[in-house]
Image 1: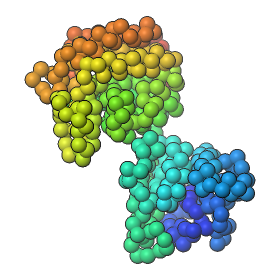
Image 2: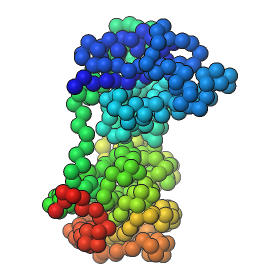
Image 3: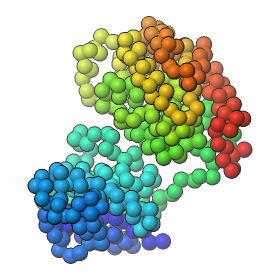
Length: 414
């Protein structure tokens, strides 16, 4: 089937570039639905979705948008309207993907539009600030694709045409190749890190699959947690095994390796049963290019690779994290159990390893025993999180929930 791509941009100032993208898509057999998000000027020819449509969807007329006299305020309205219309076009089956073009203003709007689309729908942004630290992680849709608009600030040239042509081919190719999620088996969402740090998924994934469930493991390095939380918010999981809370610790410590302020909340809000464990909650992450802040310079340190490195939280910090953990789990509307491994919470905290800190671990354990609310059942195990006993405990809880219909087996689960 012919795929339709929604093309978003300011057609008053970027008409030539947007028409070039459209021609590239159409030459490859695709269709284009155009959306104009400009404010002051008018496009050279009418678009399928006009700036008047966008402004109305944002709650104003275009005249009212202009009358604000502030481009930031104006684009906030246009961003809201554009995102709502993008979501509507997807629900109505009018589009198979989106591509947007812009500088900082256009990118700001395009990020909202990408967030409005479900995971799995192709969403491409061609931007002069792609990959820039100006873009905070929580503005990024989990599966967004960004392409640097090299040499494209003003007008077409051979350099920017190369970027635009690749972007056009990429979004159309993605739309042709996209596969909607298979919902024939109930889905368990799990968080983890690479197996050098946390190993439970190697045992739990096949064990859950044998029980008739599909398992998605999310890498807890910022973007993975964002995808996990987005799906949890949508109620996509029959159960979550949120066993790696490193992003949660990063959030509380102000690390840039964060998955957003809603970490550890959406499964609870959606009523999804959740088994939680404090995997890697002893570590704070830094980008590989960052200098370790002075406050962490005298602590145990692990350099994982050139992209990421970690220091260890002290006992006082770990106690504080338990209080925030207790508040978030206590607000959950679904069944919640917490596995507390007394022998350690990631591979590098074992005796002899660089993150070994029995005092810090002991402080966390004692605070958890005191602070976690009664509605959260705490299961202590005299083992490390990477020991077989942890996997056995998690499966025992899961199987009991299956027996009591806490976890939905789904029509095709065994």
